[in-house]
Length: 68
Image (cartoon, rainbow, N blue to C red; front, side, top):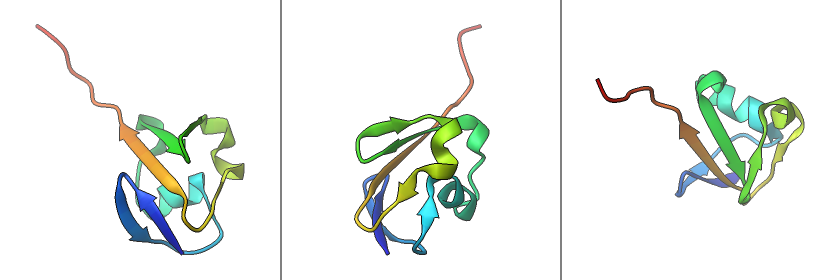
């Protein structure tokens, strides 16, 4: 199926949830935030949030840092 991942068209297997999509993409779920069709999906809901054909998914990585 086709989705838009971080603004880019992408072909992914059908029947995915947010959790399985992150796993398929080899992303560490402990350091990301996910938006599915313009709604934030909290981590406890990843396993039940279906990613359908045409979905828009944004994944944002947390990066540590700061001033010294």
